[in-house]
Image (cartoon, rainbow, N blue to C red; front, top):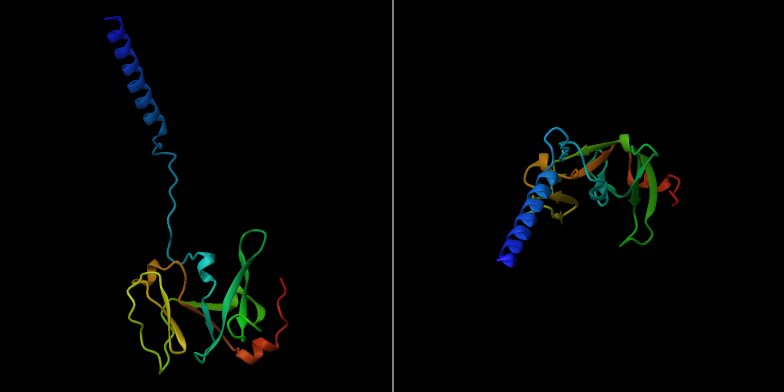
Length: 163
């Protein structure tokens, strides 16, 4: 009888402790802070690889890095120009606000939309890269950027960015 009472007491204590822990672990409604992705916010890691075009819809490079100032604001993007398979690429720093960010795929006369249903894939078709993400509002990155008044040769002539 003693062991039965002891087992019941231990079981009751364990159950009560579990309920008390569960009550303490639940977030309070007045202090819960859940943040979510908002339209117009992009993951910096997803900007690497985004193609950069000029106003003539010619690809002039791609983004290799994003440079932040000490407050966390994006200050520059490092664009890789020229080269082949990462060899001989010329890196230049362009002010982040000089780029126009575009969510729709770049189109040329020789480019057709890619037929890919992967929601995060970037596929190259012709001279442009298209991003198939369903709704443009759900992207974690823009499809491409446009740098006004620049050619590939002008970017190659700029001072090289050194890490």
